[in-house]
Amino acid sequence: MNILKPQNFNIQKLENKNLIDINENEKIEFCNFENENCNDINLYETEFEHCEFKNISMQKASLEKMTFRDVVFEQCNFSNTEFTETSFIRCEFNNCKISGCNFVENRLYNVAFLETNATYVGLSMASIENVLFRDTGLKNSYFQEIKMKNIYFDNTDLTQSRFFKTSLENIDLSTSKIEGIAISIEDIKGAIVDQFQAIDLLYLIGVKVK
Image 1 (tube, one colour):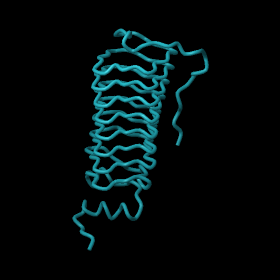
Image 2 (spheres, rainbow, N blue to C red):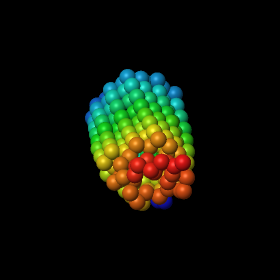
Image 3 (cartoon, rainbow, N blue to C red):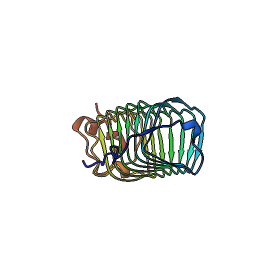
Image 4 (cartoon, helix red, strand yellow):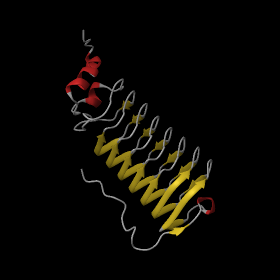
């Protein structure tokens, strides 16, 4: 597992700023955003580099064509926010809440989700590479037509998650919960599971365990 962490945070001191003052098409570098409530905010083509978001509430927001590069999100709440055509590059979500978020046509490259509530998350037509989900709840999440490479599920709750045209070949699910997962034989082919999980997947071939 080789997930690159956010880079160059120690180059200079982070400047305190408020998200409410950010304009469209603005590039923000080396800034700290903390203890701010900006629910229902709309942001478009804004770029954040080497920034930290701490205890930010940005629920039911709309973020389109954004770029987050070398950004740490700590104890933030982005529930039910729409991320459209957005890029996350070398980012970390630590103890955050992204329940109900929609990541449509997003690019996630070297991103870690740690102890994060990601239930009911929608990932459609996204490109995901070098991404870690650790101690994270992905219950009832939806993965549709995703291009995936080097994805790691470590103690993740994938209960009742749905996968559509998204191959899990060579992906290790053995430490995760997969009860009620909805997936085709083609997409689960080649995935790594333990013996108990294999029993949960027998329904795919019409077998019932007595």
